[in-house]
Length: 50
Image 1: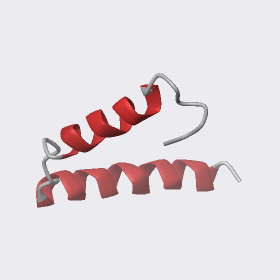
Image 2: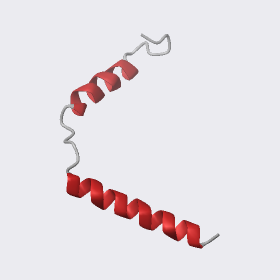
Image 3: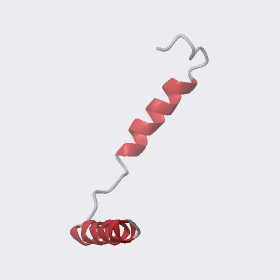
Image 4: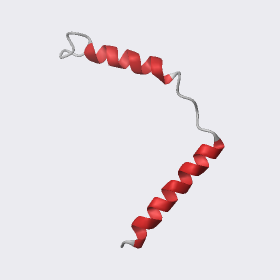
């Protein structure tokens, strides 16, 4: 435990984060493709400004 975590604040945040991670669903192929498309579009806009 951290010396500056006397009240357990950070420990409780870590514990909560670990519990919540199991509720995160993996992305579907469709969601991944949509994300890649948005990233590519954003990158194209930034490259055109140069």
